[in-house]
Image (cartoon, rainbow, N blue to C red; front, side, top):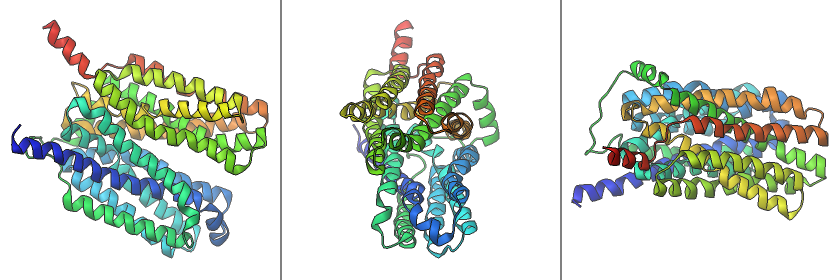
Amino acid sequence: MSIIEQRYQRYRWIMLGLAWFVMVCMGWVNFLPSSLAYQLVPELSLTPSQLTLIFTAPVLMCAVFNIPGGMLGDRYGIRLIVGTGAILNAISTVARFWVYDFSSMFILSCVFGIGLGIAFPNLSKLVAVWFPSKQSGIASGIYITALTLGNAVGLATGAYFEGWRFAFLYVGILSTISAFIWIRFCRSTPKTVQTETMSPIRGIQAVAKNKNIWLLVIALSFFVGGLMSISGNLPEALAITYSLSPQKAGGIASLFLMSGIIGNILLPLTSDRLGLRKPFIYVGAITTAIFVYLAWKYAPGIDTYILISIGGFMFGCIVPLLLTIPIELPNISREHVGGAVGLITGLGNLIGFFIPVLVITPIMSTRTAAAYDKGFLAIVLFIAAISLAAIALAETGTRVGKRIKKGN
């Protein structure tokens, strides 16, 4: 192996590490308002609907800006577009130190959501440009863990700061450092890889004609809807139905996310080794659905902790692999990966956002044990439905290439 190749292999992991740092900061900011709600509500005189708007603004902005963010990454490169997203994150977070009303907090939440929306789809482009197919799954899993870990840290750390203003200030300073490091040390492409600058409009038109992209949109919609429904309803349902303390109910729900971080890494790594993507997605979806529903039914015993952990672990493999497939589709060039992933995540987030709002919340509205039973059955059916889209997808793992080569 030449010195240039050794440097290239080393630098791609450095690039992924830089992206991981940026995403941890963004995830931290994303869920920080949740852990600070008890301070924000009285000081800013927020109504429940205003608080909900602050929480959901980033999700809606991501849904709107994922597609243009991916297209801009295809046109101008990941260094500039991810860097712009990181700067918007830093500015909007530090600026919350001076907020005194709902309007300014909501606007800054929207600005943060724009930053996250344009940055995220370009991480798949980073994987497409810098990593070989045999490492695409694990590379995607690593950057997904960053956002998940950041969300968990955001939920856990709010109460440890001197006040909510200093929480945003300190995390904003860390976000500023991450943006500076990314812009200073990132490269859009390796020197050994040649890429063409192509029209983003033509690229998104080509992507939209691919049926696999629309199957991925459907699968991601069910994933987002299931995740939001579980994280938003499980703690309250456990507390009301089984008379658990908020701390214990929240602890059970957090296990789902924390075990998912392990699944983000181990299952995509196994997928890389076996050279298959689809079986991990549909087995993961069906297993998650079964174990989450059993965890709800067996609550609040020790079985619940075990079952919810297994469900979260299996759930963790789904998004990394869903976002690896567009990288590997033979008729999606690396120049158009940003637009492809932007389309998938934009529409997936938008449709997924309305699943809990229009379906799950009305079912659970009476807050009775029977209503929660029906609600969680609906949630796991949405999760299991991911498998239907996955079965119809084209397999893109390295084993496909080996079969083609043998056939020739």
